Length: 603
Image 1 (cartoon, rainbow, N blue to C red):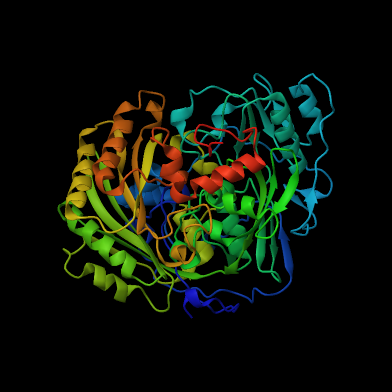
Image 2 (tube, one colour):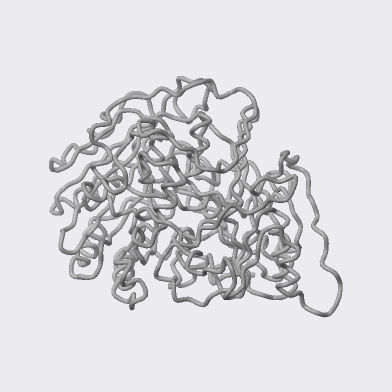
């Protein structure tokens, strides 16, 4: 059965998936694929009962996850393509020196989710703050929270742990960090910021490309709100806002259900979804935001709401692609599908074929069935050389060989041509995240260690249609110029295919406007952790020269999840024809601009 025709909930249904791009993903190197040509059937019938799973790591035996080598092996053997994860903002494995023990939760709520799912139509108003001319104090806020509030010099105050990209380590530290344990904590923080006027930042996974998961005022850290509840009968999964992708995929895959999304293990599910959510299943499932059934949120008036297509429909529309400008999301309920079986492929050529490969890919990709997702990368690593590659996933019956033969026809023979047999959704998503053989918790912890993170610069564009040969030549030359930046670890471009199910929605159906585009493209540059706080000008310049090389053809368009603080007229660049409606929603739900940051939707 083709994915576009709907799904039958049967345990023997097979699919395929593969690599992803930047803020939601990584690209595997050749070593990920070698020696894994086998098939794994989905086990059990996923249509029984209601399962609640606490958001904790689920440990797998080494033999249970073997869709590829672990991240260290990828980096050792995978060549240039493997480091694209780092360049993408989801790099190596790392551990947060500020990782905290589990926080206590109030009765009636487990790690960010109520013990019983509320009706989608229920709204729970939060108590209003006491009247009076005096502004609230942080001491008063701390007393209202079941979690903890950290102040400078106090326990749990570690601004460095808030941001994934080490380049932002020197930015202004917050006045306070609220480690929220419940939706009530989040509501208290929002009310505090509204009354005090303190700049408010909501932190989920900490991957904001602009460094806006932190700020000078109150940071609301949702990292302890990670519960996941799967309702098999309703075919939904409700995920607390602080959950990271490695945990999400582990728990969904263990329950034999799935959603489509990015593959970086430490990216937060909320940030990914609010910006749209491009990932390895995008052409089969649609964007991550397309799979949302409802959101639990706290709006600027301090109210807890559940919003969906019927209740607060305009806010529901804006939250699917409009970013974090409208409310603090506390939970997301997704429509889930049977966990698929996945094929992956990785092809690489000598640099002399770069222009031919990119041109062939951009004409081939939109003609492929929606069951095939792919990414074309041109990456340069000073001292090691440059390589073009095409990798991706196949979600159809059989293998992707027939489709790949159409791409390879007329191209030089690739120097690397790896393909896997079908493996499970869980195995694939963990392998994509560089977690093969590790539990989600081990992978996340390792992925946050400073030694495994690279500072990076990034920007993006939207490819509306196939580019002329002059554009292809321009970007190939711009990428190659990175070989002269001796201190750069790796840089280049990643073209991620859209189309398929992404285009099933119309431009105005959600806030994400690029429904008819061929691809998004990300420009990146990564450098050594030891140089994280040094002048980023060489890397920023390289990224901007790549973007400028394509601007005559791609214009100022951009993808909001790959935020670039230097963009001119960022609202139009990110949201295009949907900007007017987004501003109306902003004025309705956040007229005082409580949810503000440098590239928020303007009032």
